Image (cartoon, rainbow, N blue to C red; front, side, top):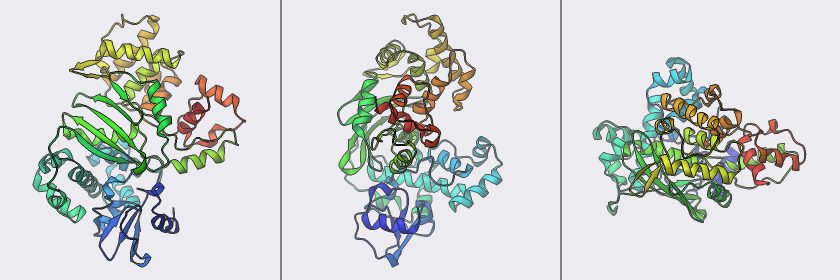
Length: 450
């Protein structure tokens, strides 16, 4: 986008551009989202920034009314397609904080990574990480009851003093000044997670409804929720769709708030909240040769983890959606960990140690489940799902399904899927390769035609 588009989007308060750029008002020293309800400033008093951290670096304070910390994030395909963007995403996801480890993960030297980051984002990696921590802390201060000390540790700071100093330096305001006195203590955190419209909730709700695994998941006409667990935390969330305000109101219970940020990031991924859906649909419409009418606002319904997505995919090989649903339900009922009313998807270790006597299926399919679970138990940090292809019984469809729903990769076409084949056969001829880098959305668009 150029500055003329930003000017028009600001003047119209178009929510489709929320989070894609930020508006700083020189006369007030405040930066806002383009949808801010405050009176529109004169153009001569306005400066535009692609990233919030650049506005903060120039001395502007975040607006308390529109709260830039609550803007939708930037999706993987936006901005410069460089190693720097991948580094930014890993920091945003709270996956990596150490520069040396981050560089090693990206396969480059730390010196080169620092150069790239400074070139594309205008700040050092350390400055950006601190800003990101403070931005998330600001959201927790204004939306939850958590004490400031707990927020400091939940956002990665080692002391409350370091937290206060960094917050004031990065956001030009003291954290205590943002906390209202009417927050009532509760075990449930309630946060607002926005998205850019349109958002086709009925389509997403219907897709999840047909694959719902009770009691691990629950759904209503306006909400979806589930339990989640790792070796470091457990919890659950319920996301309520608020169409009129372009956000979800998300209730979260978690036993270790130190992992709250990655949990929130995963909820955003599962609900596909950061997609620039207008850009995606414009691209698809221009490249399908009028094969079908693109369904507006269609999102990618994610699964909580790659492992869970892989297990669901194995159980769904060459069977109907209903049959696969019954098999996954049986697996969770037999192997899922139960704590009171909560039921969690079984861990890789538990699945690997099972003989699957409760399943009436060929031994080869059971062996595939065992092979996948054993690999994931031994390699919990591995996110290169192509390595699964070395496991007996795992083919491209299974790996691509896990990439599509377990990692929410945007450019996965399930061309081996029977439903995709049927939809393509019924449509006018077109070249799916032209729909890159959004072929995951093409897959769901084709499913929607059935």
